[in-house]
Image (cartoon, rainbow, N blue to C red; front, side, top):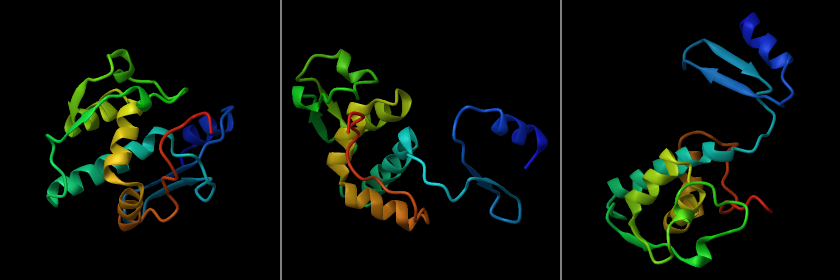
Length: 142
């Protein structure tokens, strides 16, 4: 690890973990065995599962979901969907786009319900991330 990166980490107030590799012999690692919450990084795995199911013809990008009052969970309404009126119809692709571009947590939870937590976790494991797991829909108050 470079001296500059070590300096940044040692002067940080945050608990930091890094693991990066070029899949050959170059590895940067610091606290690589420590468990961290994935936060919005988990959304990448949800997107991968989304497009995997599209590719396998299990779901369609134009499947429609309705934004409902029950989709609002206190503490997660970051993004854009909570600015709209209930009854809004969006496609699954719209939800996936809002999840990634705006980090919209309501869209994320709609997709978790749609795709299934077990399916998402199976894909995470298939990709070799054996220590990464989605336990539940996003709920920052739990």
